Length: 250
Length: 224
Image 1 (cartoon, each protein chain N blue to C red):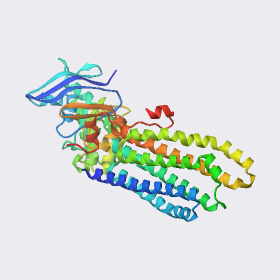
Image 2 (image 1 turned 120 degrees about the horizontal axis):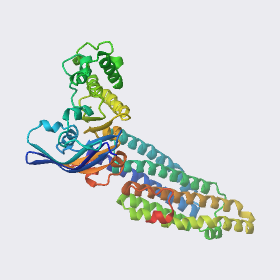
Image 3 (image 1 turned 135 degrees about the horizontal axis):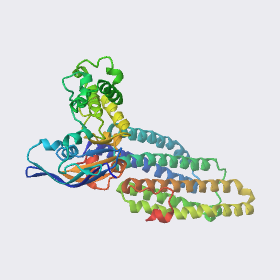
Image 4 (image 1 turned 90 degrees about the vertical axis):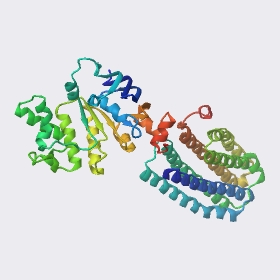
């Protein structure tokens, strides 16, 4: 069974159609890269997986998005538990104005966890998972804003991991980071793949090549090509994909 | 045109220059063999340095493109193909140099009869043709021309396969001319390798244009 499936998905902002008949099936424990020029619909598509677009008024979705075989847009779906299962990391690191510890503990607290020991354990494990522990273990009570951009982004990933999701969505997670932090986040994505299913939007073609197993190329709301990343970057089947990845788009 | 396009065009132009030089070397090698022109053979040996210099330059150009432009898809295949063609051209240059050294070392002119019965000149012309065809295929990005090379190689193979017996028979009947006959046999072997290099280059051209890998396939498969 596929971890995530999208069947005949159309999506509208008002009357403007942002996604046209998107069909994708994503295997568990893989990294899928969504690429395409600005405005092609890739971020919109990513946000459908945890119903972030629900927060925008006057939108409409037709078709189905299944996670673990369940239609996440079906009536009666609890959006909070969906978002617990499908974590998200954004373009700019967005730690809360809290301590490093509280940032990671936040998701647990809002979900009603009160067991202090459990929270401490989960915070430590999550921070260790993002290879940030050695850098912050002595300043857990300090503000998350004291961390560098790269550290903040890894902290945000730790925050997403703390509530134990099975899917992680990343919307250009390294576009605001320097090469060293970028490389750390990419290494992390590679490590996390064994436990999570990851979908990443990126404008960096090399990054898509480095981190993902499959790549989907979007253009003007349509899915142009979806294949193994190796195939997309060595021998794409569709000329438009080739023109885009080789920089001859226009 | 993108910056990468300009770099790729430049790489192609440099490859064609090297290729033209190697083909010229091959031609001069042939002339020096037929006329036993030792001066021409010396010229071939001297010019081999230029081939080597081109090889280093093309290697560096490819390395720079990989490092600075991270080519993908057809661009990646093109640079990979040039990197390998560069190697094939350098090897061809070495082989021609080897032929020129034989011409320089041989004491007498080659016996006309042995030249004729071994069909070495015909073989030389065939390898020349193969190299010209594959260069044209590269220049025009024409894979049907590249495929022609696999057929042209059949003649080269045939002459090579028959050469052992022909030379052995000749040596038996001309025991005073063993050295010349052996040199010719070595030249035939070298020409056969030039044919192989041309075929490798044809495979690289098809790889970069059609994304098909033809290495280690049968002749029938390669021609389709």
